[in-house]
Image 1 (cartoon, rainbow, N blue to C red):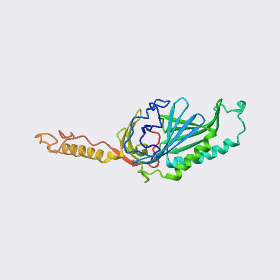
Image 2 (tube, helix red, strand yellow):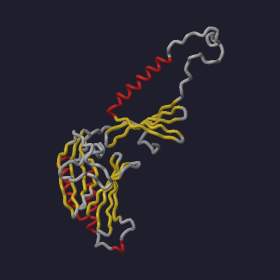
Image 3 (cartoon, rainbow, N blue to C red):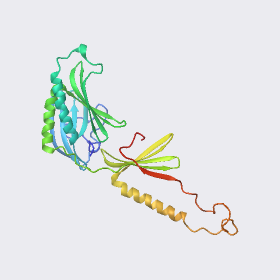
Length: 296
């Protein structure tokens, strides 16, 4: 399962006041899915910020939503699969140990980018960048969540002094609900490649925050496009294609009226009979191994 349940979970609880807009303008109050359940929640007050850790569950499994609310009311959030939350918990321990080993802040000895220690976590189509940073306001852990190959980025910033408290709260939730993400656990089929004339079609099976999908990409030398078909409608998609294939097959092989006196009717000459179809396009199909390359 991917790290978030639906991609548009709403912050509708009374604990989130206001219009539910984060710094980037994302509306948390829209799109709440009725089948989603909140199983548990914890609130932490760390310096001037409040953090909510919500364990949620939907048909794709369980995950943890981390929401940060600043003193000015600005909101931001990230989503963690249960297994990713466990990995994050372990990183918090190592970051805390490193932070404890640091001396007092020294404005003359701060890296140009402010980063003191960094780690990265990868889960399905999402990356998480953990950066312990220092600026004029102090030291903090920034956790950024991104979608691979671009896409929106969301992040929360945890004051360094609160990392242990945050880790302990996360540990309590993981002890209660485990580190099993739920959802699909089998091995996804390998990608396929189809070449027709000067076009290449790639069929890649993947999994993201909305479930399993098939991405069909058309690639030419100076052109590429793709569609994404959710797994829940593959059967219907196949049936529609099969129906068109059957109809075209019947139309193509209807008996043709004889043309008396023509060279083709007499069995001679090289001309194609009137009404016949051109030779089918040549194509090759192969199977790709591993993940899809950056052709899409």
